Length: 217
Image (cartoon, helix red, strand yellow):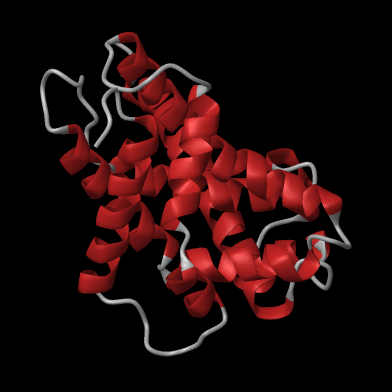
């Protein structure tokens, strides 16, 4: 009888090899973007850094904006994996959940990898509109949409007052992006520590609930 093990395993092996190659490309692009900037990095240079052909590179990504979007999207996906669960208002203290969510979000923003991505966008976004678009849609937009969805559920249950849940999400995230974030973006010491992160997240949750809570606080 013919042994068909190889024919069964081949697709899985090919998929794994393809995923590894894609990972090589994304990591190579991230290194070059952070080291020499978005504008100065060509697709040819990325292919060389990744050790793949240009044809292979373009098979995965049609352009630099798609590559940058992948870098941002994957960083955000890793953040989402560690994001605290946000159950219904009847299951948990809302203020405490917002504080935990805020602490996780700030810890993500303060990571050097994430700061480096945002520095590239701030420096080169005006010259390359596709860069800012790729960053916003793959990063902030995803977080706003996720948070707005949760806030809408809380509004339906009466835990938050009625209003535009997307605006509520934008305002909560803006409260978290305090002077500490700007200072760290500019590499001004001292770096935010856990106590400062907790203080900012607690104040943001309190201010947000004073504006959006179902009852006055």
